[in-house]
Image 1 (cartoon, helix red, strand yellow):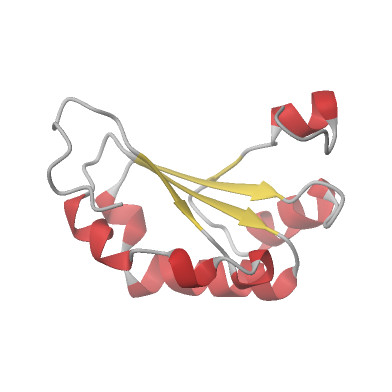
Image 2: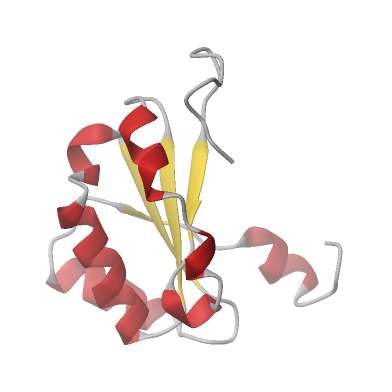
Length: 112
């Protein structure tokens, strides 16, 4: 959905779909131009290719200077959280790693 008309008082969490999600064609990269520093950008990482793709998007769209918070989450049961953490630390990314808490609690139960 386009976000340019969203009230500026609203905090936006933009979910950028990675290639392994098979939903990356739904991304609306044009929305990045309307992000505010108080907004967040989230990537769910499924594998190393997703990680490298996401890292490239950080640079391509200069995301680290557009928003104050960028989140990388390991996809539940697809990548070990420790592996994602190692890559983030190795590359000294200025992002936060976030666990998908709903997946940790309920697993893959639909609707949770």
